Length: 550
Image 1: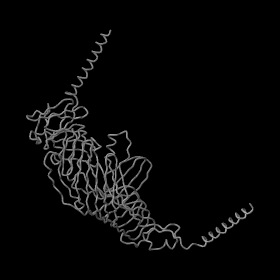
Image 2: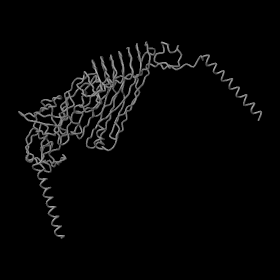
Image 3: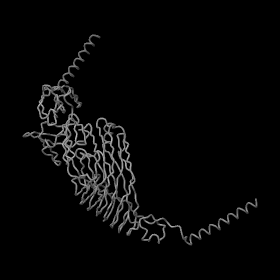
Image 4: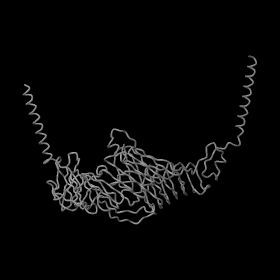
């Protein structure tokens, strides 16, 4: 009996082993293939560029970086058969890639002038200047003339240049014709295509903003990249018209801008509408310096940190014509820098109901340091800031409106990794007619209501939130942001309701807070005080008589 059981178990184990073996052999030779990528070197450690190599039973071609991209079966080592090259690559079904030999790497490591990025193994890096023929953001179609062959599900990077932040895509479908690849793609996030991104800007001068750098990315083991720089720009003219409309139909938000191509159609009966119409003219001027050191690690997120030193001085000379009531932000400028992925947006922010025409001249220094790490410690630190300003205009507002300026890191398309900003604007509920400035203690202005000039610093890092959700999905985490006040200046202050009419109508009361007067008591106050004194004497007399009787 025991012998029969043993034989039966042996047969069963043999069948299971046979099935698993057949399954593994199917995966290794006939089943699905998986994308792999890497860089091959020759014996002199020079990249094996623009050549054909025999990788196992695959014939692959390298690009001008020595990078190859192909598809292989899992659980097999694919050896380069070219004479004198010691390199083999392996992958499992989860895309975990291994290499052996000292004549190459998996993935590709790239650098530009002040940026380094490590591409995930199995992701293709496409050098825009060499291989990109066309990309349509409306049809999401990519046309390439590349040595690589792509399949559905493959991931690729379109390299950044001086004009764009590049793109990261996943292939949805593809076809090849006349030596070109036509692929339908969708945008994907940075963490899906990079293992690490490092940005070390050095000191960027405010007078050098706008200087773009065609610092093409090259493999890290080659010479420094060739750099083409555009002349710097310190002064920027702004002419912007904004027409914004927001509706809520049912439970779906509908936004439409005349300056943007974004809208969501929806159905429903409920309708709440808000609008903003704005005409903005003037200029921005930058001085001072900016410096950023940042590491974003998508494999070991505890290594992620950001350090920003902002000593930019921004001079605004703008005329606003604003009408409506809405909350939001609209971009006035997007200023490039010579560092890939680092830009300076200038936004108009508003959360207000207004009908306002003003001229606004303002100079603010946003001297600050900001640190952020994966432990979720955000710490903006400031120095004292005394803005110079002059404002003239007419109209009314209730809420806040102003300008938001500061560096941001945007990677591959429009994915914002981090934003550090300074704000300066108005907050209050007021009707104004006239002018006031930091140099005039008695402005010529007719006023009612309260109005403050406020400045603040802030930092936001959606990439930190994302890393936490990826690596610690069960841990609840608060949105990673921090802000501090830079200054708050009371421009106008309504007189308190119990102030005398003489004080309330004083044209020279200007911007100072009006304190209630305590001089010259009225007759009613005197009568109330005298009556209280008589009552007190009566009580004391009664208590004295009661004490005698006892």
